[in-house]
Amino acid sequence: MDIIYEGKKPNLDMPYFGRQSRFFEFFKKCIEPYLNDTKIYAETNSGSVSNAFEFAKCGYKVITNDISEYSVDIAKAVLSDDVVDKDSTCLYDWLNEYSKTYIDRASVFGACIELYGYNVKIPEVLTPELKLCIEKYKKHLTKIKNNNVRAYMIFNLDLFDYLDYLYKNNIKVDVMFMDFAWPWRDGKETQEYDTTANEFTNIFDNHTTKTEIWNKDNVITNVLRALEKASKVSNYIFLSNQSSNFPTPEYLEVNLLKNGYNYEIRHTMLTTADKEDNLLKDDFFREYLYVIKSKK
Image (cartoon, rainbow, N blue to C red; front, side, top):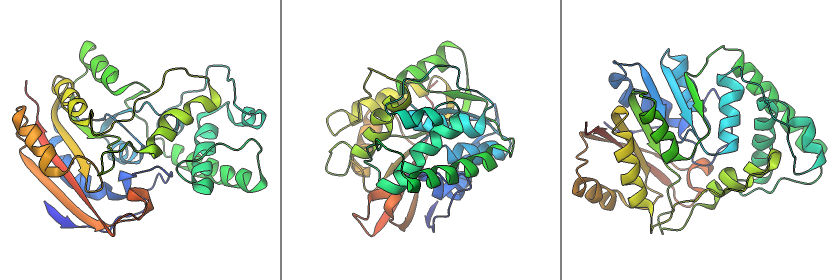
C-alpha cells in the first residue's frame, strides 16, 4: 500500500509527541488482515494509547506497554478499572490533589504539554489556566473510559523486559506493533521523549532509574534486539519508521536484510507534517511500515 493520507483527530485525543493515532485508518488497513489467530494486538511503545484504544474498540484483545508514566496513566485511565494503590511523593504540593486517580494524573500531563510544549517543566504553582485545562482533559478521559473498552493487559516496563515477560509467560500475539523513540534524522536523541519517559516519571512518584533515549550509535542494535525478542512471541511484527527519523529507510532496510529480516511488504504513507510529528521542521511526513513474519 502506498497512499497519500490526510490525518484525522483521534477519538482518544491526548497530546503526545509523534502521535501515530492520527493515522489509525492507515494502520488498521495494514494490520487487521493479520489479526486472525489469537486476535491479540500488542504494542511495544503505546505513546498516546489511541491506536490501542481503537483496536480494542474493534473487539480485539489489546496489550499495551510503555515505560513512560504518562502513557501508562492514559492506558489505565481509559482501558482499565485499576486504581492507584500507592502513596505518592509529589514534586509540588498542588499535585497531591491530582495524584489519586489515573485520569487525574494523565490530565495533568496532557494539560501541561498543551499549554507549555513538549519539553515542559511542570510548574511549581497551579495557575487558573492550567487548572481549567486539567479539568478539560479529565472530562475527555472520563468520557472515553465510559465506553467500557478495556485492554487485555497493560504493562509499564522497559521495552526488552516487556518482551522477555511475554516470552517467559508464554503470551503469544498475532501482531506486535513497534514504533520506537527514534532519533532525529541527524542522529540526535529526541528530547521530547526524554520528557515523557524521564521528567514526568518523577512528578507523582520518585524514580531513580533513567530511561535511555536512543541515538544514532545504538538505534540499529536496539531495533535488531527488539525484533529478535518479538519474534519469539508474535506471528507478525509491524515495524514503523518515519521520514524525520534516523536511520534512513535505506540504511534501516539494509540492516534488516543483513540480519535475516526480509520484510514481506513495505507500506508507505505520505501526509502533510504538523507539530505532532516533527515540529514543522519539514513540510511533509512519510510513514514506512514494514510487515515482518517472525522467525520461529
